Image (cartoon, rainbow, N blue to C red; front, side, top):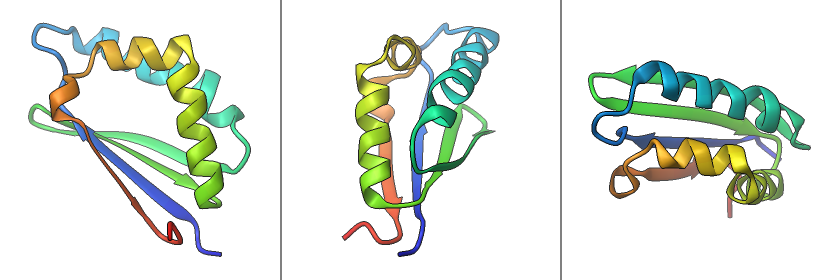
Length: 97
């Protein structure tokens, strides 16, 4: 099975301090993502006001479980509170079906 690459693009909520967002993202990466079974890699990128989180998972099931863990966590809630919900686009590539 090929790895699953997950790409999330978004904008921050107007007025959100970049340092606060980067702190929240760092915590998601270190305290949540790297502790998930089947997690391989995560990185953050930016172009103008658009942000990108790229994650690699070993299987589609690992990606789904990782998303569920993120959604259920206080770290995920904090991260999403800084992101404009209407701007979020998530795509998965690989053996996702």
